Length: 143
Image (tube, rainbow, N blue to C red; front, side):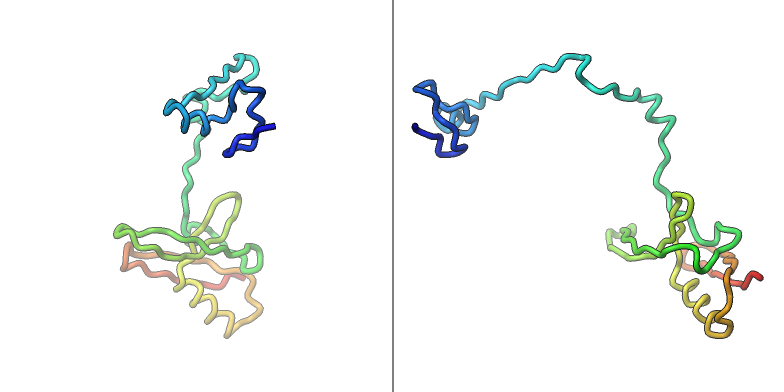
């Protein structure tokens, strides 16, 4: 039994190989079989209206957007982003209620200082002032 050098299929008793690649090499024509599906076999797709209505853009909030931050309740994850100049940078987030909250390094440093002085702290509040490079964060202990 003679087999196709490309796909390994039987060349089927002189009818030639059904391998698309071999047929292309022999004839220079790309004959791709068209598969037709019955309408009832396909899954019902959502309309554009339904998709747009249900759409929730991926958004990263800031830890200062939370009223209270429990220090032992959330796992921190690393993320990568790209700035306006195309440079890649890393940042940390915590995920709460399917929302991501970015945690600036300065906030982590402030929490570390608080924990060095008072290791039993359970929660903090973070407030933010300014914007851009002039953004400042203040971390306070919550009882």
